[in-house]
Length: 217
Image 1: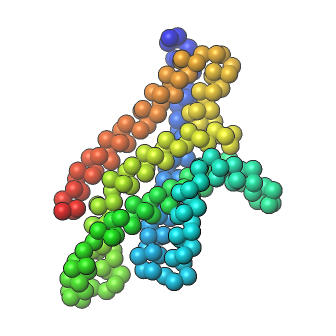
Image 2 (image 1 turned 30 degrees about the vertical axis):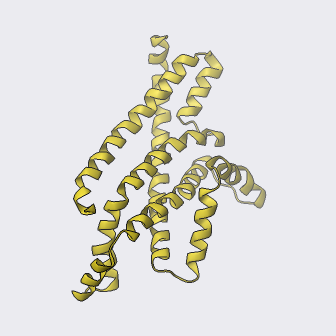
C-alpha cells in the first residue's frame, strides 16, 4: 500500500465526496417530499391521483436506477430535453427514492389506530389538524427505521451516477486506477470515503430512532 500516493490524491477524493454529499442531500430531500405527497394522496384516496401514484411506485421500484439515469441523460435529449448530469442524478435519485419513501410513510400511516383518529375528532380537531398533529408525528416515528434504511440505500446508490459523467467518489477511483494503476490505493480511498460519510449518518439515525421509540408504543 503506497500511503504517499494516498496522501497525494486524498484531496481529489475529498472533492468527489463533497459532490456525492450534495447529490445525496438533494436527492434524499426530494425523495422524502415526493414520498410524503404520494402517501397523502393514497391516504386520502383521491380518485384521479391515487392510480397515478400507484403506477409511479410500481414503475420506480421495478426499474433499476441505472436504467432511469440512462433514460434521463441519454433518452431525454432525443426528445429535445437537455438536463445536466448533476440535475439528472438528483432527479433519478428522487424518482427512485420517492417510491421507497412513500411505502415507508404508508406503513406508518396504516399503523395509526382508528380509535386515535376518533379520539381526535371527538376533541373537535379538524381533518387537517388530525393529520398534522396526531397522525403525522406518530406515523413518522413508526416509519423512521424504514426511512433511515432508505436514506442509507440512496446514499449508496450515488455510486452509480458516474455513468452520467459526474466526478463522484466512484469516478475518482476509476480515474486513479485508469491513470496510475493503483487499484489497491484507489479502492482503499473509496472505501474509507464512503465509511466516513455513511457511518456517522447511520449512527445519528439510530440515535434518532431510539429517541422516538416511545412514540411507537
